[in-house]
Length: 161
Length: 161
Image (tube, rainbow over all chains, first blue to last red; front, side, top):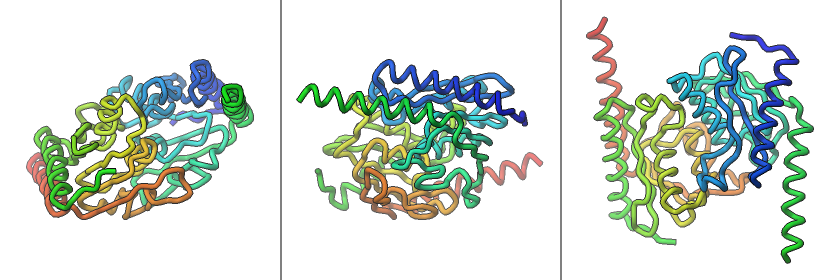
């Protein structure tokens, strides 16, 4: 499997952050993800839950579906997933089902994170697939995007009162 | 919210079993699901992972996506989900994200079940949504469909050796 160096990891996370920003621009919670194989981005996604009115449209799920389509395979072996915020249960389960070996994420999600905050499902050796996890990549940028987004929402709500 | 009686619960599970059988007929792992609202089935799905070559194509996810489309909403409030086998992490997370209040399932999945076997995520009060769970509905039928399916696979493999 391709070993990534620090600069590569940073660069792919910047691509995930670009996706997060695409979500922000259309007033979706700003989370972005990319799937990489052999140095190539083969899936991209950003949160589209409100635009799609579909509970499954998280960044990671959309990036994984695109990668499966690209490879014509539900098995994303030798792939890395980069996501700006810690995956929730649904997205962590999708990562496991797609048998992705490595996940890099930015900031933790203390309310719904299933990789480090509330659960450690990606490293659960009772399941038939385990994932190598690296967290904290450009975490401040991801966290700031989220903070700014929710701050703006609160300000809009105040104005409309 | 609509309260379902035993006969109704049984009938919706038979619909989920019909979906499971649709999977079996095309050599997919035989799991089926339906989403019900106000006595009407608004989403149906059966496992399509191999045909779709997409890791997300579990019965529950497909039924939930169809129900979201039908309601033009990612929130499946006042809905019930029926599924023949205990949901995995991905599907349980999807149920939580769609805020489905009630889940009925047939047989447990000791290797990947996230509702009773390995985890109890639907009843985790640290998350922002909890689900009422009833298990064991026509469980033997669901379990037999699975057993028969895997038995046939083993027999086919033996023949091809």
